[in-house]
Image (cartoon, rainbow, N blue to C red; front, side, top):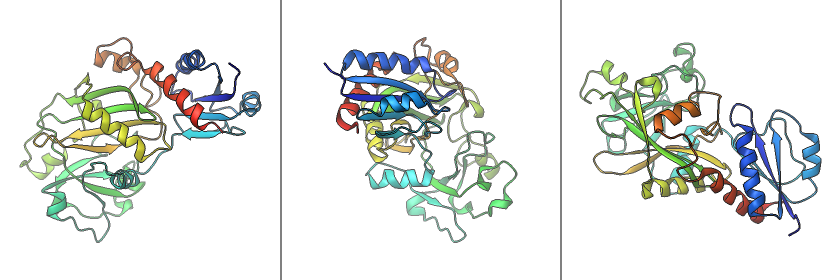
Length: 321
C-alpha cells in the first residue's frame, strides 16, 4: 500500500516522554501502511520534518499549543487553555450537565432557585501553582460579593482574572471527583479521586466552610485513587469532547451528586499538560499515579497507546489536508 498521508505527533518536553509517541507511531504504521508518521519537537522548528511532511496531506496532533514547530500544511489539532467560564458556556450550549455558574461582578445576584444554599467561589483564570485553598472556596450563597482584583493577596489567582460562583455539588462526606483522559473523545484512562478526610458538616461556621476542600487533591490532604469503568461517566466524557472538538486531548473532570446521582462536568483541562503516562512537569507524575492506582502500566486500563493509534489513524484518513 503506497503512503498517501502523514501524521505528525508534536512532543513537548516535560509534558510527555517522546518514547510514548514513538510507541504510538509504530502502532499507527502497523495499522495503516498508507500513513507516514513524523515526531516533531515543540521547542524546535524541526525544519527537515516540516519540509518532508509538507509533501502530502497531513494531520498534526499536539496535546498542547504549538510553540516553535509550525507545519507547512495540514489539519491541526492542538490543545490550548480555555477560560473556565467559556468552557462551561460551551458545555451548556452542547447540552451537557453543568452546575449553575456566574461571574462575580459588582452587581452580581445569585438566586436561591438556581444556586441553592451553597456555592463554590472559583477563579476563572487557571493557575496551576496557586496555593492550596486559593483556587476554590465553599461559602453560603448570600455571602458572595465582588472583590476588586487588587484586593486579593499577592499570588492569588483572583488577581489574574475574574472569579465566579458555581452551585455546590455535594459529592458526600468525603469529597471526590472523576477524571477521564480522552483522545478525540476515546477514553485512555479513568480514575476517581476521593479525600480520606471527612469534611465538616455544611452547617459549620463560615470560617470552617471556607477551609473545606471542595475538590479532592493531594495538596488538600491524603487521597485515594481508583480506576473505574462506569459507562455513564465514560459516555459523558465522550460527549464533552464534542463540545470542544478542536481540543484533541481532554482530561474531563466530573462530579456526581451523592443524593441524586446526577453527574456534572466541571472542566476539560484543555491546555494539554495531562498526559499522566509520562509527564514530569507540574504536579503529579507517573510514579505517583502508578503507586496511587496500584498499577505498573498506566496504559493498561483501556490499552491507551493502541486506542490512541487507532483513533489517530481514523482521524488522519478522514481529515488530513
